[in-house]
Amino acid sequence: MKSIWIKSVMALCTGLGMGLYATQGVAQENEVVLGVLCDRTGPTQSSGVIMCSAIQDYVKLVNLKGGVEGRKVRALEIDTEYKVPQGIEAYERFKKDGAVSILLYGTPHVQSLQQRMAEDRIPGTSPGFGTANAADGVKYPYLFPIAATFYSQGAAAVKFAGDKIGGLKGKKIGFLFVDNPTGREPIPVLEALAKREGFELKIFSVPPPGIEMAAQVIDISQRFKPDFLIANLFGRAPSVGIKALKRVGFPMDKVISLAWGAAESDLEAAGGGEIADGYYGLQFAGVGDNYQVVKDIKAMYTAEGKPMPKVMESTVYYNRALFHAAIQIEALRQALKKTKGGKVTGVEMKAGFESISKDSLASLGDLVPPLSITANDHEGGGWLQVFQVQKGKFTKVTDWFNAYPEVKAEIIKQGH
Image (tube, rainbow, N blue to C red; front, side, top):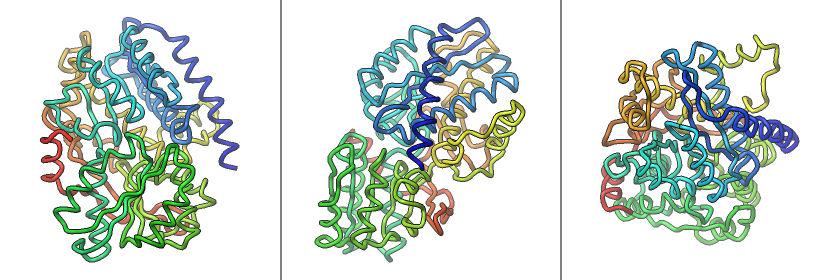
């Protein structure tokens, strides 16, 4: 059932995304252009169709409310199919059309575009993915993680595991990951923490796209037998991992997923939420639909006489994309205030991002973490919450927290 509605939504939204770009062109006098990279048809489309639709919904809501300081926003979107060459081409098209900031998508794209953005002085945002070292705003002036990087996710997963198993010293921690830049990104912090805390770390790599991991799961469950397992799977891989671990009898309540492997769509693809009961997931945005901004978007659809889009049912991805869009809009608001409504460039947008705090995002409530972005800290603190699958649904089990900031800072300083 899930595959049917995702394919139909994907087809609709792909047309929407291409139409948005084809018909909008260069910004008009009273408009500001944001570039949106997307994957609606590639290997991570199960999250891409949801997140890119949410970004468009949020921008439409902002424009219906009068825009930003009286200016309309255009979110020009290109589907890159999660392919780096298409991402580079899309970035050049955005630049030509006057985009003042880019909503990035995918760690490979971030790593390929970060130098271009610095040279062009166009900021890009990569919440929860990309280059963890970009938390250092001095070294990466135009790249903004704006949410917990993979270093922060790895550190938080280790802390949570230690809390659950009564300490880390002498324990075994496994790390199951898709063997590409995204999957490998947390390894430096995991290795540093294993040395510091005295636990045995063993890594289990899965060839991309991560749809076959039976051998790794058997190795985990029957040979290594970890006290806790950290997973960094994404795309189709999380559901494959859940089913494989369940099949060999590995306890779900001894598994914590990093942020890209714990969404409603992952549970559905695994065979339903109940199969994953006990499974933990890190989240850098709120989960569920009890947020005012979500209610406002639903009201927007109702006022237009349209049914609620199916993508809104996947609140994990939908909400974090609202957070992503809101950060961009707030940076634009700050930039327009500084220029007194004048022309905004990437330089002003950079300053706008570096003015954002939890207070400036107060209208979003607990949908967003208690972040504070500065010229030095482009991550905002690395805040996360843990949700657990209980009776097939995600239930919050921790408040916002961050972990091992001094360890992460040292790794970033060393430039790993």
